Length: 219
Length: 228
Ligand code: B12
Image 1 (cartoon, rainbow over the protein chains, first blue to last red):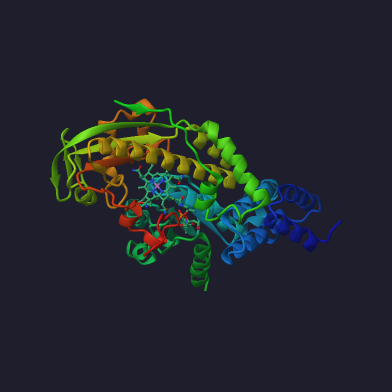
Image 2 (cartoon, each protein chain N blue to C red):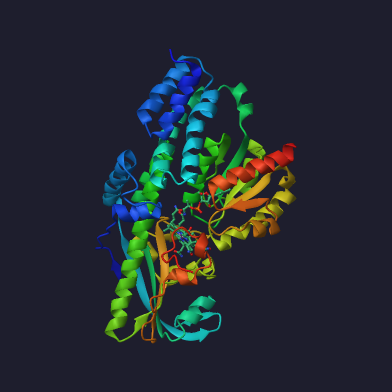
């Protein structure tokens, strides 16, 4: 049997190599070896995704390679996620609700941002597209997230942020969450003017900003 | 109302890689094979169709156009770019629901990247179809010694999305299987609307593209011209 560290490193490397078969084989070995599934995700699979993100930022690889790694990452998640024990849940960085705001169908940005967030150890709940304010409110009450992520891909739907913030205030949940926006039309300053906490048009920059927000909150 | 269905959509691996920020020389092995396979898988799922109508413009105001039918299209950009136009072509095009369904299946089965790549193929196909529509109107215009404006759509350049309603009142979009939601979203999602004016200026678009009028500029990864 390989050492735990070696096994988790091989899991990470298989994600980088887009090697789905290896990820599946190593995930099964992890389960058989009794390594906690959450640990295997956080220090194996996700480390692989993080390396991919770093290589992408250094422009060593291109989007098609990132895509290959994303599906490999999820092949491992498919096996490991169901093995996570309830007691392990507390170790996520934070929970993020993601959805494309009402009136908007652009989903690609959100769908690319989600694996990046998951790879950074955030728990993500995906509400889909054309999401109404009522759905966001219900999800906040159900999942108690730290972040509500709004995919706002058109100038017109970016303006819906203000209405959502007002509704969150009326329901008494505004101060419980960070409201963040993403998409090509977002502007951090303007998002703040509308009552959101921040906005980014790049998922990796968003992760850095989200960690900063968490740090401020948690002190 | 005229409907066009017999359209061969051609998307190359280069087109697909370009929208994902790469070229064929840069991507190799598994990643490239994956893209090629999905391109082959997408082709038989495309059901292209567009419907159009030629409408006379009754009045050009500062903030939009009044059509012969009484519909008002409320956008300064329309008034500006179609100021010499007497007629406008309204179009709706779609690639149908099948590709979208396959992408959804991939997503639900735990392959979000495959879903994303198929989605990009769908967007390229939608764009290809819209450009075919433009080419058709270009030919109509040339036959009567006119030229065409760039294509404009609700949601672009300050043209409010609510004007999607005017398109759906004026075009029988159900004929090509496209419906509009009360939040002004078209389904199948891979559908677009566009308005193209027959303008009197010689040169018409004068080599301009939509990007020249769009506010996103450098923030857009899909920009056609990378100059200032
Ligand atoms: C592909 C596309 C489509 C596809 C949809 C594909 C899909 N499933 O999403 C199709 C062809 C169907 C389409 C249709 C329309 N579209 Co369109 N579309 C685009 C296009 C070209 C690319 C979007 C994209 O995929 N980007 C790639 C992703 C990866 O980038 P991203 O979204 O920025 O995401 C990154 C970050 O922002 C971040 N991120 C994303 N989400 C989130 C969320 C959070 C919380 C955080 C923190 C971060 C984050 O992470 C991602 C990775 O870094 C854009 C132009 C553009 N430059 O964006 C226009 C664009 C968004 N569309 C536009 C419009 C108007 C429309 C239509 C309404 C036009 C019409 N009248 O027909 C229709 C609507 C169709 C309908 N069914 O009703 C306009 C919006 C204008 C504006 N600024 O308001 C744009 C900007 C084009 C333009 N230049 O004007 N569209």
